[in-house]
Every structure is written in C-alpha cells, then in structure tokens.
Length: 165
Image (spheres, rainbow, N blue to C red):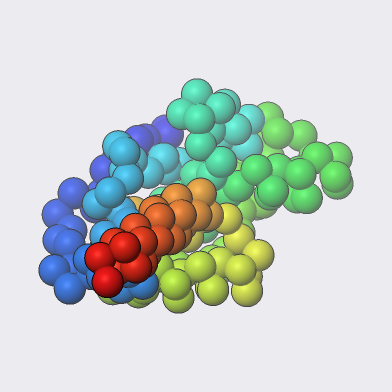
C-alpha cells in the first residue's frame, strides 16, 4: 500500500552550512516544504504506483521492503521500462521495472556533490540514506532552487561590498 511519510523529521541542520556553497543534504531536506517521501511496496502494480505519483504530484516513489529502500521508480522508468516495451501497468509489479541498485547520498553530503552525482548518473531524484534507512529524497528542482538562492545571496553580498566601499 502506498504511503506518504516524513522520515527526515529528526535531522539537524549543520550550523556551519550558512555560508554560500556550504549547504548539505540535511539543510536541503529541512528546508523542503512538507518533506514527504512517497513509498510503495515491491509487489505494488505499476498502475497503482503511477496513480499514487499523480495524486501526490511527485515524479518518483521509493520502493520500500521491510522498512529499507530497495529501489526508485520514476516517470522515466514508466517511459523506458513500461511503455516502450509494451508492458501492462496493471500486471507489472513495480519491482520489475524500478531502478535498483540506485544512487543515494548521505545527509552530510554537500549539495554541490549531490548535484554532481545526479548529473553523472543522469537522475533527477536522489534518496538520502544512512545505514540502509531512508531519511528523505531530494530532486533536481530542490538543488536548482538552492543554487538560485545561493547565487542571489552572493550577488547581494557583492552589491553591499561594492556600494559600501
């Protein structure tokens, strides 16, 4: 059965991460609105997973078995692993078409490192895990929003410096 959870609630922000370029995945998770992660079981049908993604307005779900993430299922998986080969979403289990193993990052990973990892692996969703436990999920949109805010802050600092000296 699909679930929506907020697993990262206990994460603490790194006090040194307020400087531009120093943010970590913990900081990003704590700033997200809602911060919920949608999960489904491996035996869930693709049809149920996709309906859940549509209802929750998300581009991916994490496949969880015995409280441990075992895969990621994304909109891209729907295209490449279901629609293109002509598989039936009602009878295909999400475990048959999920991405596994999957790239993930620890909470202390810098946002810059996460962006590089996502770019190298051509992924838009990055689970945050510690010792096999899911703490949260970030998207490329989350990283982009962080970077834009970081650039605006740097620009304001430069403007203040230039006009005060």
